[in-house]
Amino acid sequence: MKTVNILLLTLIALGMSNCSYKSYPNYRASHLTDIPTHEHSNEVEVYYMDDDIGEEFLPIQKISSKKTGEDSYNKIILDLQRQAQQLGMDAIIIEEQMDGYQTEERGPSALGIILSIILDIESETTYEEVYFQEFMAVGIKYRKNIDYLDRYVYAKTIWQQEENGRHKIASATFNLFGKIMNLEGDSIQWNNYQAYTLEHLVYDNEPPWTWKNVSSSDQKRWKRKYKLPYAYLKVEVLFMNATQINHLDIKKKRTHPRLETISEERMRVVYQKGSKDIKRTELYREEKLIRSEEYFYDQEGRILQRQVFLFKEKKKILDKTIVYEYYRNSDINYFFPNSAPNED
Image (cartoon, rainbow, N blue to C red):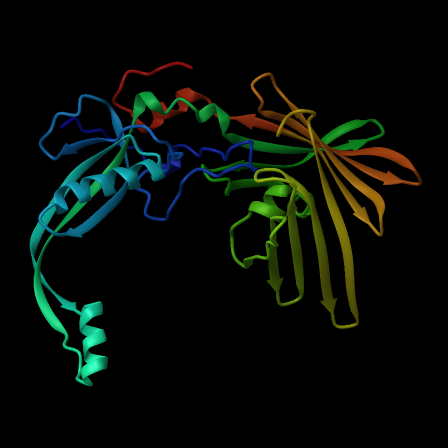
């Protein structure tokens, strides 16, 4: 079996997908290597510990399956392959196999229940020794199929617009799943900007957010709440279809010893004509447009920058520009330090 040396995560911080309002890559805390994987329906190959795989690969996650019955082997393999597809893995390596017999309780049959009622006797519970098998495996991703890292954001930089030009006020670099690895500059400015991004309002899964599905029969709706000791933020997300957001209703409450403030806002999401790419978001307070954020893409559909505009006295004023940087596909080389480098 071909083995690989895996460089520590600190050698590379891979950014989250630019399409942060779309499906996130698969991730669990038990990931063995922090490489993005996406669900697929391709055939998953099955190997054992002594097999020669013949491809460079990275271990992604351990999985297991346990089934009973004489045909449990086939059931287990199919279940492991299904799990691997859902987790975006190309193959599995069976590391450990166990089998034996376990005692299972068997309740009375339907006929037995009926007879016990008719005859007024206690139904009988029986016990049976059942054969089982359990497999432990590790799911892997082939290097040749990790050709999509240039879709992930490495850094965002916020530029503040001034009368004499613009200057950088904050920048952040991200790990694979969009978590900030390093933040430089004015953290307050960064937090103020981040507060009104769709990533935060809709897709930020960090505590203390909580989700609740409040869908009606004719419209998909979600509610979520971000609650802190001194404030809370409630967001209701309404969808126009399965993948596109119509608008968000936002309610904020902030308290301090002498003042309590509550504000209600609405964020409208506008898409490119005939596309699922976002064109801009518009933030309204008391039906008055107070802020918009416009998206600009490259030829590959990646976000190049976002511009934040404020509306004051019926004037549209450019306030900030957020510039995106992306990883390269060749960054996968950091996970294969003993291999010949591959260029983009």
